[in-house]
Length: 229
Image 1 (cartoon, rainbow, N blue to C red):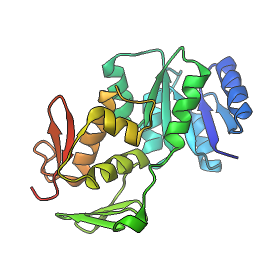
Image 2: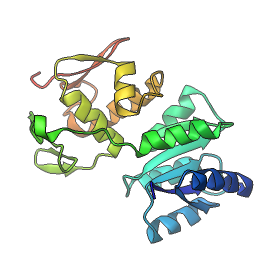
Image 3: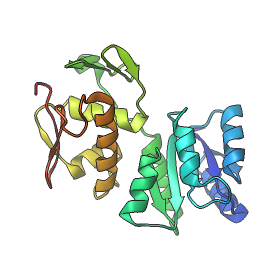
Image 4: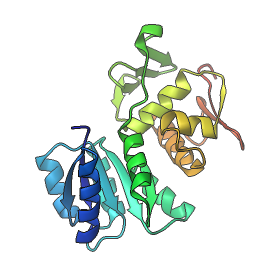
């Protein structure tokens, strides 16, 4: 088994098609027709990823995403017919790791699933497992981040992005390089992803997120980690 996926969509035909495609790729796929049913299944079973439709009757996909993210680090991919930057930012702000617009091809969705189940590899043999700057400690072995000694909850993608920047200090990393290194080779133009995730990280590690000391923006180019501001 390479992963267990929860499909949350109120359309039974869509759930059926996705379940068939995922099963053929050796995933274990389980369907839920509403946010309430999804919450129940998440309480009862362990999943590796959630495919979550934005437009559902009752509790919306965005509300469901925020609720799932408040208690879980599970990978979440939002599925929606909307494709504006504002819609993408709303999904990412709610806690999604990725965003796929309907209609989509199954190869595209499968590529996104693989990317979001992937973890950025760390070579602890070639470097320290604990990285410290200011009052922040990043433990690459446990994937925990401590600020002033307090364990701060990071999603897997937030941790991967922070770690990549921290191990490349004082270097301006272009947007495309960051996206391909953290999300995968099929990414590169999703600048909204970086904007949202960097802002989320800043809120967790910066004393003043509006005037960051560590994660600096290089306008129109990328981001730079400055360990000694």
